[in-house]
Image (cartoon, rainbow, N blue to C red):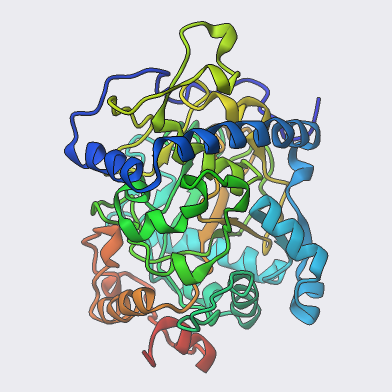
Length: 434
């Protein structure tokens, strides 16, 4: 058995192969806009090319399993930066584990303090799912701010942001801190709410003209030329065109979490599809094609029909992240390519590109809580700076961040310390000088 493969496919939602045409005018307008701009022939050409690419990619991932996800040591990265080979691996796979960013003892202490803090404020902090809380709407706690403001964490975020390029010169890899929540998942707690999905918007990728431009090569019939690391184009994309709690207002070059406890396969970890270029191309082209009726022809891309009049966006809900499934996106071979992340220890960090398909581990068969702080790598852009400036003002006034839609005044929580004691580099990242 290849390490990291899903042994038994979970009861995640399947989004259908054919589906009903959407009555949503935004979806219909988005599809028409892409066809008008790029033409049917380019979309057909791109479809055949990306499905051909996926044959090789899926063979590689299914043979490697979790070993397809690069693992590097922070001591090396923080001292020397990423080597050319490390950059190549991260850009190819779109994800990476960096070990030992936070000292092991400090991460364990943060976990202990987190549990004390949650218990002391149990009646005030919201968490979900309601029947078995594990995802906490906590954003400005002392423990989160201590880890976020750690100099090595900030340095690593800058190095990750610098993997992107921007010839416009209008952005900087200097990190800005985006407030996100906490996971503290008890053992034996099933979780099916976040199956295979991609964040940073859903229908916005097709509907927003600036977001569509990010994928110009894909829609132009050249998916192999798609540059998944061009911040100069991505910085202008409106990923929350359809406002909802699932959508982030800021661009996260890498989503990420910092482990406070050990995390391993089937013990409350995460699954990743370690390819970013071809998978996002396939996702974007999928709504333009109708599957053949015969199951035997499903994986033959030439048997799929260009569908100009229908409007079926599988797994796409304007108010949710973009979801995928085995049935709706068959060429991705999710059962073979969605793999568990490598084992991590307290203080290790895991990062994945904003276009990467991932899922929360549906199982937790471990013996202790699986706990992480969600801390992304966000470069400095005009759009992000505007949000972070607002986020800081909200935090100081006791309001939870806008994207969370939360109503709790965290300044009134027992043990609250604000940004007490953080250094100058951290103050910059928190938005004090914007």
